[in-house]
View 1 (cartoon, rainbow, N blue to C red):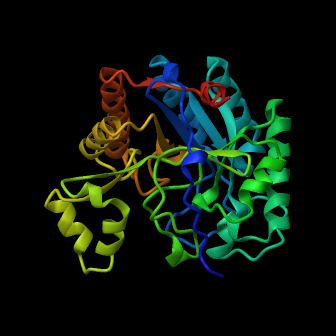
View 2 (cartoon, rainbow, N blue to C red; view 1 turned 180 degrees about the vertical axis):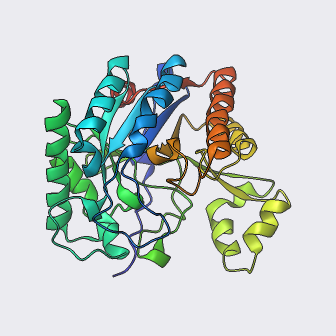
Length: 328
């Protein structure tokens, strides 16, 4: 199977944000079960103990007026304790529940669990649709409303995904991670995608925000891709301040680099910044990014510094509902 590469949107497909919307940021959270990121995927891994840390983390965001779009998967949607926690999160009046499809733990289980099949877009259309339909129904039953936003687990969007999402009433997808290439593991290739929103197949794509920084940033994705073919080329360019690929997440991304990326994005007129993190990072030991208490302290400090910087720039938070309203 050849890797899925999303088509580059035309100018007509690009989202033109209304002037009153201004420049905004949003926070999408991958709310999911815990598993060993270094081990083969296993359907038996459905623990959700890290959700105990979610209320305190949500409180930090709520105090700053920041809405969370919580993209939940099957182990979360079918766990009463997690549903109760997230139901209280929704009481802030701005946060919202969306969907994340981890194919290996989401029924029906008609496929062998492999690296390739963990990317939902690699599944046969009928199976991808069946898994997403069952997960959507589980979320609607748990929260009393149908989800409107989606992210494919492992960013595994595929050739049929947008049509399936439109059929199920979704409005937003946020599966594309510009500048990243998952082909080595059987996943999609996003190296030539960019961070600007666009419309495709009845869905609005809100890519996660990836920004190229450095003196050679005009070379962007093309140069970064070429450097990947040169031994240690990317590292050399990054150390020299020539070109770095920066994702807006506290997970394995230093705050200084992220702040530089925000400055570049703002200067280049990107109107919506899409920041993200994984919920298991809220408790030490569940992701490679937060291994101990010191890592967790840095994680929270990253958000404090980032939110302060966004505030100074006049970049306000946008809830999912505010985004959808602006798109209309």
